[in-house]
Amino acid sequence: MKRPMNRGAAVSPARFAHWLSQFSGYRNPVTQGMIELWLQQFSAIDRDAAARILDAVLFIGNQHIHTIFRELVNGLDGWDRAKSKRRGRWFFVPFSGSVGESGDSMVHALRMATSMTKKQYADLFIHRSELVAKNPGSEDTVVLVDDFSGTGTQACDSWHLFEELLTGAPRIVLMLIAATEDALARIIDETKMEPVCATTLRRRDNIFHDDCHYFTPGEKNTVLNYCRRADQRQPRGYGDAGLLVVLAHRTPNNTIPILHATHDEWHGLFPRND
Image (tube, rainbow, N blue to C red):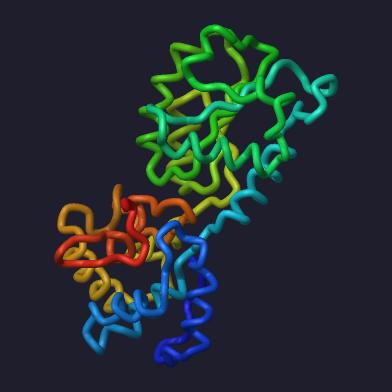
């Protein structure tokens, strides 16, 4: 969560320009008209809090994602782009339960970011179904690639799909763009994966947590009421995470629903589905 502007700050052209600049890379284009319509869903007295929520959104754009992957990969012990300098064999695998999930797009982003799209690097990038044939052993490294973990539940569930395929005891790295500290702790405790994460979200990043001091208890209750309108089942986001995180290619379901829920009663700025 980013620090929002002071209470009562004008929703000025400069503020709109800042939001538009921040959110320009989202897969569903965000326009000034859309922001205005989103703000109008709040009563006049509550629009200041709504505007401050937009200020606080942590938006991770595509260029940032590429920079993150480049830095994370280059920081892995034993890795080198030159095969002769690597320790053991290396495999980069989408951390997905099925084709088309976020892991696939993240592996593509990683290849682009590290300039490894040429044929000479093709053997480094495989899918889960190929792990048995490759049979990575104790000297090898398997890097499972995904974007985000909010509670650790999906990561731990997906791990069970991989565990039975990795019987040769390779080093297993889970590479993430961002994750909560609770998710990382659970992944460490419940799996054999070594999480490597660029951005760790703390309890203060949960807008409803007592550690979040950017919003008053009254403002939090007001926001929660609107979140109930956006999603009665998970008004605090999945796992009650209360996050304000948006990735360029999708919004995590751990993010509060007023930012992404889209239905007859509410229209979010960052819809999760087309």
